Structure formats: C-alpha cells, structure tokens
Length: 307
Image (cartoon, rainbow, N blue to C red; front, side):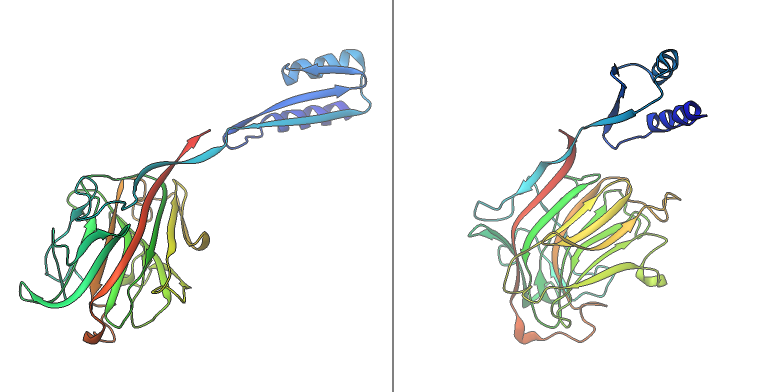
C-alpha cells in the first residue's frame, strides 16, 4: 500500500508543468542515489532493493526566465517634426465619431513637434478649415504594429475643461470595424474631472454604447505638472494597465470568441488631444485655457523573449 501511494505520488509529480521550464526529479533512498532515470525505472529499482524507508524527494526547477526586450522606441532626442519613419498623421475635422471640435492637422509644428527631448502635441484655439480648434493625432498604423507586449509612454498631460488627451491602441485591420476589431485605452483624461485617469477596453461584447464597457479610474493629482509612465502589459490571456508600475485595471481573455477578445491580432499606437466631444465636452470648453500641450518624454515597446 505504501509503495502504491508513493507510485501515484511520483506519477502526479512527474506531470507537473512549470511555466517556461522543466522539472528534474532526484530520489535519495537510504544511502542509494537514483538520478536521471524514468519514474517507472526508479520505482522498479526501489522495490527490488526493498528501500521503503526515509525516501526524500528533491525537486530542482530549471526556469527559462521571460524577459522584456525593447523592440521599438522613440526617445525624441531630435528637433523638428515627429519622425516620419515611425509616425503618421490622422487628419480631418469630421468629429471622429464623438462630435469632437478640433481639426487634426499634418506636418504642422504648431500642433505636433519635437523639442527639448519631448514630443509636444498642442491643441490650439484658432480657426482652421472651418473648425474652431486645431490639434494633432499621431499613429503608427501602416508603419509599426504589435501583437502582445509592454507599452510604456512617459507623459505630462494637458489640463482644463474641454481637453481630452489619450494614449491608446486600435486593431490594425483595414478597414477597421469598431468596436469589433478592438480598442485599448492605456490612458484617457477629461479636463472637467482633473486627475481622474481612465483605462478601458472596447470590443463588440464590451463597450460603452451598450453599457458593458470594462474600465477603471485611478487618481493622478499632478497629471499636468509632472511626468508619469502610463503603461500596459498585454498577452494572450490578459491586459493589464498601470501608472508608474501600479496596476489598476485588468481584463482577462474569456476564451470564448472574438466578440469578447479581439486582442490576438496586431494593434497600433495612437497619441492625441481631442477638444470637446461627447465625453470631453460634457461640461463645455473653456476657451481661456488654450493652448494646451501633452508632453511625451518617450514611447517604448517591449516584447517577451526567453532568456
């Protein structure tokens, strides 16, 4: 009976899986050492020698550690327009599905430029193409997209009623079907609720228009005077969003269908300041605050690799 229990235990242990690693089993039985053999062989050898006393089971776990490898970045250590090999402009003043009030411009340093080591996205109160405000919306679509990884953006946000800055990602499918193809909001802030930083995901099953949106809020009191790292870690099973390394939002893959998890395809990154809109403009727009800037110190994309 004792041997049968031990046999079952050994087989159970042998089936244990360790993430990214393997288990090696060593048995010290009395004064004998059995190493590197199969479980069945070990049991047979132990029974032949009648070594049933003081069996000590040792495990050594060899782990292939997962490390984050930097695969893409912009450190903004240059001057002028944003690097055209990394960024494109989304342009226009059609409201962007949210009745926003700005016109997004292209190649216009008044709205997007790099200086003093920072990318500056600036929203301005000015007439432009029949709109009353200008801003910029930068995107990596068509240049770089990623499936899974860690995204870090170190940024200082604008303030004031009517501003709506965002650091976010969209599915890189063409044409994009929203919300079916997914949206990940790493950071959103609306000026009428200063210091409330939002993280959200959108997909066909979960989005705000049908009241099922998955979202969370954290407080960042000095959002407009200090830089903070707004980040996301994303893999096949979950999305986690954090500020300065502190996680405050998570969303898990239900492993059902694309309606609940479209996040297993490449996504691209967007940076912008909207003015007004269905959410950002709920309390109006204070024209006295402009111009307003979002300063970005760096954007870094990491992916996991076995060490």
